[in-house]
Length: 250
Image (cartoon, one colour):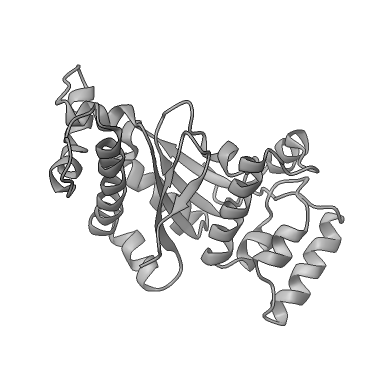
């Protein structure tokens, strides 16, 4: 990992022209997500572009990307080859995501993001551990990411396994991290893995508890959040509708 690396989101204008525009707008205090997303992405995210965005801008960028995904309209001018070449010598991701390994929930795809836009930690059940916390601390404190997003999803197999008390090698200890969400989920119906409404309620609670765990166990990230340098947020992805539901910020 290299903290001086470079990467950029897609643009119609030349890189030099966009940076000049970003500098002008930033100086005037008026560069927001509307300006950012109105410029189509062809290359990877630059430091100037990332630094000009607030955490709220970055979350709005993700929401807009999910809207495009759900409509089947991807960023027309996106060139992954151009992004690969632009980010080869450096990267400036705007966010770090903690999401599940489920093959149906790839974060970059469902939020129409490109190469160099985000760091992505993936683990069954989107739970946190020391290694993931360290990765998030690198992403934010050293590499400059401004958003930590924990994203769960519906019909999660890891959640079902935790509900059913499944045991299998190292998976047993992983599922143990999810079980507090099972016990803390308030639900009056059938509390089994066959009841998908309960499964999704537990998945939602699991995201909430994971966010709390991040704040509790990482003084680095908690301190950055208190200083308003980053936002720690949660979301749920619906496998059926393709929609990402972002939790209200606290």
